[in-house]
Image 1 (cartoon, protein in one colour):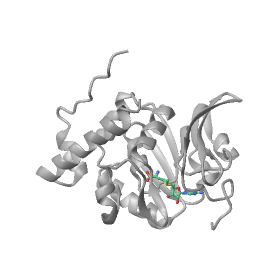
Image 2 (cartoon, helix red, strand yellow):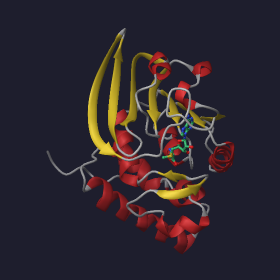
Image 3 (cartoon, protein in one colour):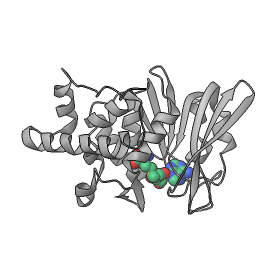
Image 4 (tube, helix red, strand yellow):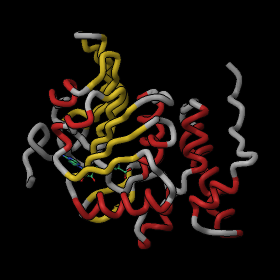
Length: 242
Ligand code: SAM
């Protein structure tokens, strides 16, 4: 298999600059930081889906991070976003997005809006994203930012996402971005007939990515890489404040 062709952005620079909300040199510097992030942290470790690489190259991750964390926006690690939460490491966002296998017509449910970055990535690949966050402050900041960037296919919900969001079910894809003790039954119930769910499952310190594919009444489970996420708190997650 050959090396994948580098995604190109002919004709898209105007849109990217709009999303950046910056001009000239600053936008250029951010774009080159992103290119290095994608090449050194993501492609180098084996992520090959061109649609995913292209979206990561052109989504301004730094805009999803509070000022104090901005210098670390394109570093190879999670970054604090307030309320004791983090935006996931870029590589983890890439792996989860690739493994979820989002199709353009899909309706997606994300649990754990956090900064809104993963949600933006999903919304550029799918038809529609519903994203649930238990911290109202994080949800509101993310919603304001996503709207200012021009997204009109994202619905932000505040609540306990461990039980999903039945009002919008069924979903073609469900992505849990917090560590769960087990895959919540409510989320399985909200998957479409050929739907797919991805979640970090394990103990509070360490988890493993689990992918579940629904085929009618059957659920096939595959196990992926080890990972560390903040806990999924709630009725079908870990005990903690509602
Ligand atoms: N996807 C996020 C991003 O791109 O910034 C990162 C998510 S962060 C690792 C995990 C998020 O899950 C936190 O914001 C946390 O508050 C949220 N969370 C934890 N338990 C939750 C629950 N039961 N319902 C909704 N959100 C939850």
